[in-house]
Picture 1 (tube, rainbow, N blue to C red):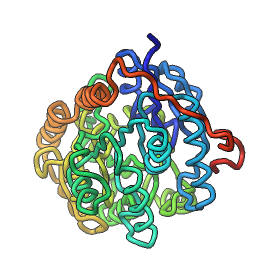
Picture 2: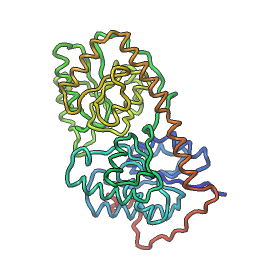
Picture 3: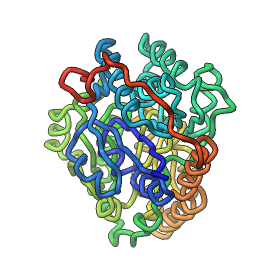
Picture 4: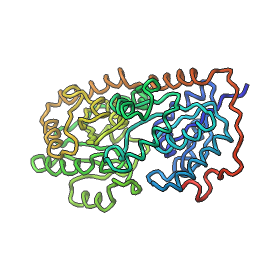
Length: 396
């Protein structure tokens, strides 16, 4: 009997490679054939290393053009009709919405993962209403919808975007506790290094981090503040390259660019900071915690799940650079032994709550329930007028 096929779709190949690699390998090891659908990028060619088959599909990830979104829906439908998967796994908003709608139209079971609410929920506008309607249509028939924190799940259920009985909270994407192993703390405590790892967006609290750095460096001029992450020019809340260059020029921050492997940067930091406005379960905090680093983050959904105030880190108010500065100064004042104890507590927290095997097991169990081993593949008719996936102009 041929392997049961699973189609997985995310808005970047980079996301699959960095956050879902262990799940893909586990699915393949469990007898599934995995097909990954994502826009082409510099990481697409490496997806074959995971053992999956890759199909490029262009997505206007931040655009709101009805014409382009309709083209994306039709492209998803044609792909799924051709692939005839046993289930569709969706991540990030456009695969979750348009991939799921296409799957439902073909009677393909879906499993969705809401990794965070994004700008449309953080900054309420007319777009929020449209996104909610789309989520309601896409998630209503879903077999299972995973959330990364209880507050996001409760919000979707309260707004009737999803049926409560179809929902479940997972500990983010989980963390590989072997790959992200504890690192010895930096030797010097006289020049503490604070590291923010994120896409450089205003919603990630980058501006507050820079403003807090200015405040802290008045009394602690040797303190260092580092930024590591993408300059995402397509996002509506993106920080511009010119802004970053001006911060570097004034000596406030160090911009480290982008890295495939964040571990050396975490190992060199005294504390990892994330002043985000809202998160699902922030991967960067999990990675830092797994490497036994203290954390400073905002007291918002997602972040506060990973930071136990006073135990493995400190919490500050969102959108408040002055309060962030106070917590940074509080960390600087801690004795070295207290900093090390916070780092050790971070590692214990992720070992207990965020081991990636918890996430992988729930996916395998959910698939087993939705897709019986002896279930035949769905009989699907390919619509004659559907556009060719990934063709120029189809889903841009």
